[in-house]
Image 1 (cartoon, chains in turn purple, orange):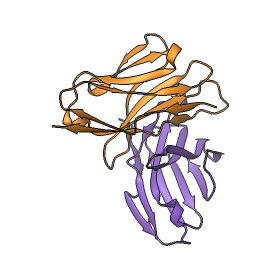
Image 2 (tube, chains in turn blue, brown):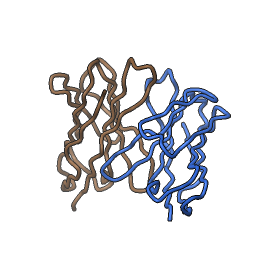
Image 3 (cartoon, chains in turn purple, cyan):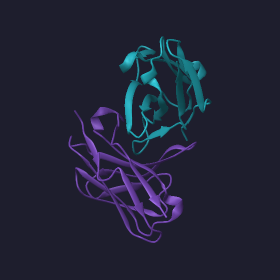
Length: 113
Length: 115
C-alpha cells in the first residue's frame, strides 16, 4: 500500500512565524504535490516537484516555497505566515508511469492567528 | 486551460436511494478523468478513473462513472447509497500532453445521507 504521511494533522501558528509542513511518501514516487483546500474552492495546486531539487509553481504559489532534498520528502514552507493562509494543506504523490493517479496524505489543518 | 465543474455544492440522498453526482470538464484532447472521495478530516481516496476504452468504469465501494464525450461529462453513480457514503466528492481531470502532469479539481460536492 502506498503511504503518504504528513508531519502534523493540526497546527496553530502566529502571524509572521515561519512554518514548515512536511510530507513523506514511501513508494519511490517521482512526483509530489502540495495543495491547499478551502470550502467552495476545491483543491488548488501550490507547488509540485517532479524530481529531487526540481520544483514548479502551481496556481497559487505566492507566499509559499518548497524544498525537495530527498526523493521521499517534500516540504512546504510559509516564510511569514498570514491569517489568509489558514487552510487545509494536502500533500500527494504519484509515479510517472502510473498516469496521474495521485495518492494523498491525510492533510494538515493549519490555523494562523 | 482545462477546468472541471461540479454544479452541485450539496446533495442529500436517502439511504438506499440511488445517487448521481455531476461533473463536466473542459479540455481539448481526450482527458484522464478521476473521482476522489474525502471523508471528514481525511485525505482524498481514489474511487475510479477513466483513461480510454470502455466509457463505463467501475470503482471501489460500488461506485461507477460514465464518460460521455459529446456532453463533456463524467458523472458518478451508485445504485444504493449507504450512510457511510456521506463525504465530499471531487472530480478531477488530468492533462495528457502538457509539459508537466497535474490534476485540475472541481470544487467538490458534499453528499449528505438521510436515514
